Amino acid sequence: MKNKIKVFRAMRDLTQEALANELKVTRQTILAIEKGKYDPSLELAFKIARFFGVPIEEIFIYE
Amino acid sequence: MKQNTFYLLVGVVGLVEVGLFALSVWLRNPLIITAGFIMGAGLLYVTRLMITDVREDERSRLITQQAGLRTLEVFWIIFFAVSLGIAVIGFSTPLGIPRPRDLPRDFPRDQPYLGYFGILQMILLCCIAFLYIVFRVYYARKYGEWDTDEE
Picture 1: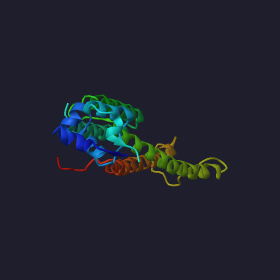
Picture 2 (picture 1 turned 180 degrees about the vertical axis):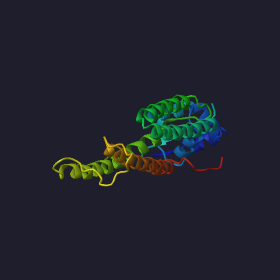
Picture 3 (picture 1 turned 60 degrees about the vertical axis):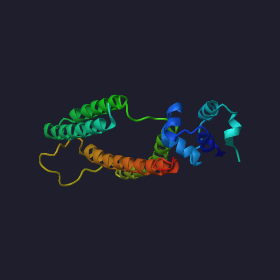
Picture 4 (picture 1 turned 60 degrees about the horizontal axis):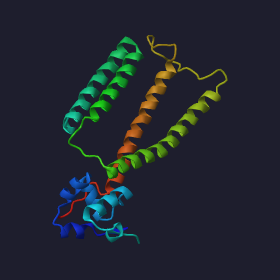
């Protein structure tokens, strides 16, 4: 599964640490998701989408 | 509590357990180390919940779960195989498990094989710990635990 978290993060000028703090996860988790090493749970994926204010499918692309 | 303080406590508890084990052997009372170990493990479990400077999330829980599951999957095969081997010794002797021929004079003669079995189990438990560490490292690498990235 691909994702555009890095793009959305850059648009908001957010660091991985800041995003991680907002989502109550570790910075390593954000890094692992961005690199495609870890697919987040549905709950976390929805939290990320809600945080950026976009539909989930705009951030996560299932291949 | 900080994580380093917890690790320090683990070391102290470990030393106390070694002392209790020595005392148990000296007094020939297995209950001392058995009760002591359970209390030590309980203490560490409670204090681990008090660690404040480490955040646990779904990815770190997944790493722990996967490592634990794989350890169990591999370990039960090893444990079962060793147990089968031991059972063969028992079943192939008509009058039960044979005693070793030359025991020391002061060796407790009631259940000497329980002691040997305990040592064997401890060796197997060391295998569990080693297996868990190997799987933990594998899954931590797989899920990007030590990755670094530019911001």
